[in-house]
Image (cartoon, rainbow, N blue to C red; front, side, top):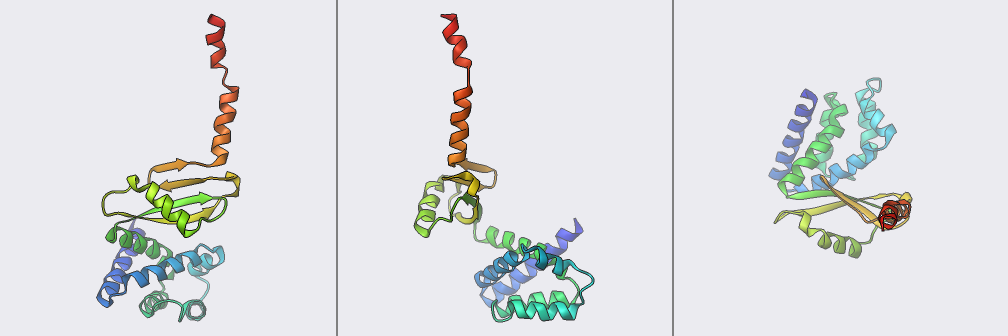
Length: 189
């Protein structure tokens, strides 16, 4: 619990600094970039490793991110590494994304499909599921590949789920073919 509080406080500090400098959206994009990198198992273990010294972590971090992310974001992360708090970075990133999305009324959604959708398809999808949003909210879709769906898509947002996949339609057809409840109705007549 204390771990989450510390990460939330750092995230709030970064958000406040970004507001002061007027580049909240840029820092948000940087954090999303970092979070993608943190999904890599080796990078995640590198951040968490107590064996690797801070100066080595700083050098690797510079190679990966310097010039590719905003100066504010880079210096913030560099300071955390210098203070031995780099293991908090993934949690801080998650907390920052949550704060940003709450501030800008963004509802995250996950779209599972065989192949990524293009911008026109995403725009159509967002307009189709506008009823899931409160007035003033926007949907931010993260796409993930799922070849096992065969076709169609699954959209997940909070506790709402829409399964329009070919796999699900085939499962429904299969269960209806094996459904023998109609036999009792025929035998009674």
